Image 1 (spheres, one colour):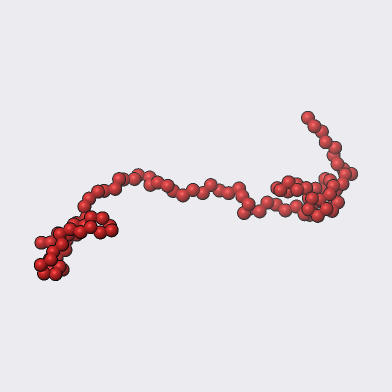
Image 2 (cartoon, one colour; image 1 turned 90 degrees about the horizontal axis):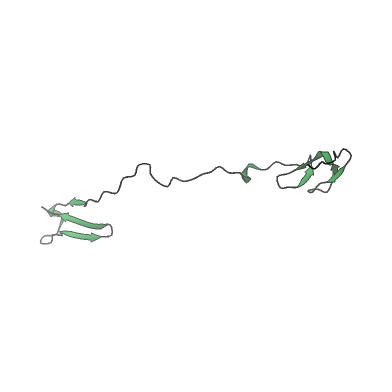
Length: 100
């Protein structure tokens, strides 16, 4: 196992300001820079680690779509005389119009 000197009388240069500090008063930042005790800054919370956030992708108990024809009842008085529509196709799908 490696043993290091205590550094009681050693001096070091700050990576941020270039000032000389006692080696024992130096601190290592989260960026890896060795700086003086008065220059040290903690890591900002915006830089992470972040909580795992995920969007829901599926329902808990899904049911299949119901396939039923949509029937719309329309009174015969809404059509011009002599013209009665019995079915029509539109952008929403097939529509069945029943007149009585």
